[in-house]
Image (cartoon, rainbow, N blue to C red; front, side, top):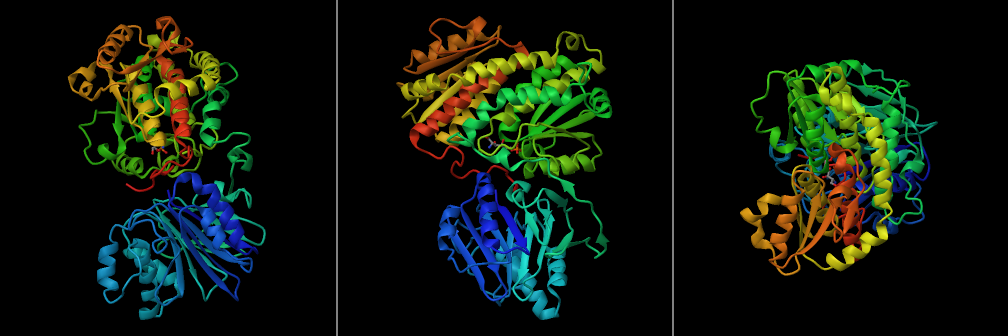
Length: 603
Ligand code: M6R
């Protein structure tokens, strides 16, 4: 979603900002803009569409020493140049970029800015004018006016503000949306994601909600709401700029699909001690073991990963598991068990829908764990425990390696809890051993690229719709497979419980509709095959993805054998490749699908 990059104290600020915004492109955006100033000249440039459009508008004369830039994913107001950030106050003095949503922007406009006209439709334009009006009407300094504006704003935000008359200072503040300060020698940077400025620094300082930070070339001053100065140590980002390079791959998604066997092995390395036992915080294991129900709360692909791990967790830990959509759960919380334990699955650790649930469960005093790929992310900081996925940055909007890493992480956690509870199933389940078999199986599947590409060409190259079906765990993989296909190839794909088709959805089957059946369940395979026959007799083209022991000669994709509780980890690989090639063959941008953002920081 929206991205922020800013710098003060270095020449050619515009280039640093452009580079940073390009690194944030993967998060999804529809317009971009930047403001830079070199004390003599100011440049405010905005454009709709890609950052290269913005770059083309910058002339060689620009050489800023301070600047703020932004990529916008439209929420209030259509994607357009006028709605792109930075926004300027009507007196021309202040420029502001903003990530997040101001919920009471209409009231603010009404209460404080009734006489003003606005050039766009964004909530951000209201905020910049609100600050300017506090400065003018109450003769306040920039910082005090900013602080006052923050006190009346409701919603989520990461703001970076520059007063053109103070071209040596960036004021920043955040609430719910991420923002970091990066420290340099003689300069400082700000960014909504450390990845954006790794070419400038690896040393970062976190900002907490409701703090205001004054950033100059020589230092930063963090203040809380009362104006008290806060000292906070910097930390070193454990990320390498090369982690975010595509290398020889045409798209990040393909690279990330290929990385999955390595991620399985990395997780084993990270969580296994010298004796081969699971190395996870004992207090965490105790708290999960003491719970009477695990609630997995997540969105999108992470939600699908929760389902894929449900029966594994239940079998090995002997604790019932519920999987819930964050955006529903937060507003319709069911009757909870007596000793619930909450697991937030989130690749980015920033998803606003999940965060609002965590805020509530924290308020209710329930223990929580965030499983995330991003150390220091908001949900990681706010949950009682964190387990990191160690999958390396996932740049493609379509999540692949985070999905499999989440399931594998839950398998490792399940083993620790099962052992702690002495559950019968945990004695025969060695997560590390099973994951090493999975890694090898994944390798053989990712090697099938050419074959899968030809299957896609044959069955899916022009279709408008497609169905994935399966039962049990295969149904959960079908849901993820369909999500992947629809989000990047725009094929209207649905994942269905195979037995449910005949209760309604079978009406949609037409001549040559592709129906892909996933068959890895010993007790369900025959039934799913029966359901495939039903659609075949109504004209569908069926494609079978089956595990070795259940496969028939005519099946199109055969999966190597892995532990029955971990089949999703392997079955999903061909479906990721199917989505990839369906997108590629249609000529769409694999890594940046339309309308989507990598990190969804609005509810
Ligand atoms: O960062 P999160 O895992 O919390 O994100 C949740 C969803 O937005 C995300 O999984 C989304 O569905 C993926 N882009 C799908 O590929």
